Length: 89
Image (cartoon, rainbow, N blue to C red; front, top):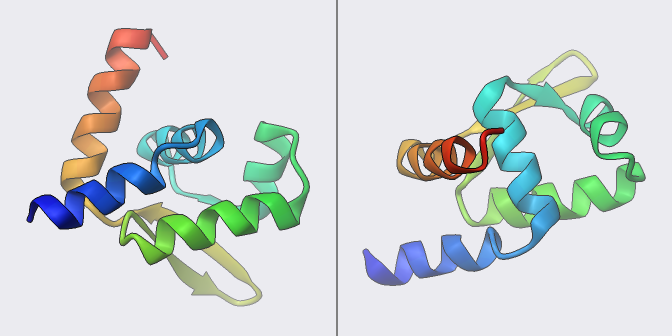
């Protein structure tokens, strides 16, 4: 269990990935909207999402040509919400 969460915390160890997960804690979202909100290129956001997916933190559900992402780990979501509450996000 500790090894699994150590890997998840490593994946969250980048500010952009933290912002992505914090945003997904508020609402499911697709890559296009994430790019607009973060003011980043699609390739950059996709690379960060791949890391988060690989760690089991987020997952995507395809709807036509669009993939809508959400947090897949409820424990990580709780942690992110605590951080958000502390930062008044």
